[in-house]
Length: 168
Image 1 (cartoon, rainbow, N blue to C red):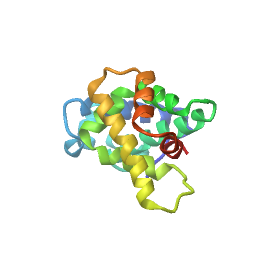
Image 2 (image 1 turned 180 degrees about the vertical axis):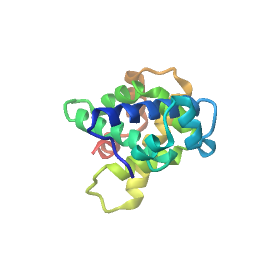
Image 3 (image 1 turned 90 degrees about the horizontal axis):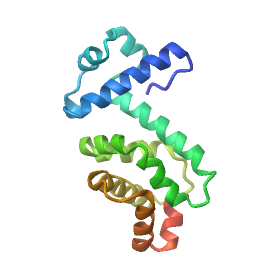
Image 4 (image 1 turned 90 degrees about the vertical axis):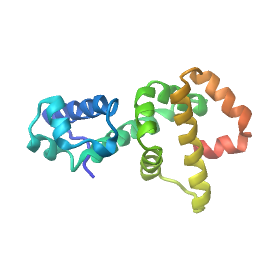
């Protein structure tokens, strides 16, 4: 998998490619998007694309990694981590909406890939990511609830021990 570059010019190219992919995802399924589509959308060369990413899915994977790592860094500064979870993803709800319509399993895969866990029980890990992914996906469709309402709704649905498990 590729990763975000430290080089300013490369980082600008990566952002341009990512933004183009997001625009294309509004009208075309991920499985049908080609490097040529992205190349045409953001006016870059094929070599620029491949210098930064291995394939189209890699673009999304790298950016989800970026957003998820940023979330992990920022959440430690918040006492109410459940509320912060919804606030953070509310600020990126357009991304969640696009991805959840494309492939909910991709969100789950990316979240699982980047989080370190002390749990050995894979069923418990799958449960955690299934719940969080489902909540984000449904929320991105309804667009009605605020982060605070989602936090309250989730607390009403789950008991405190489950919430602690989800946010570890």
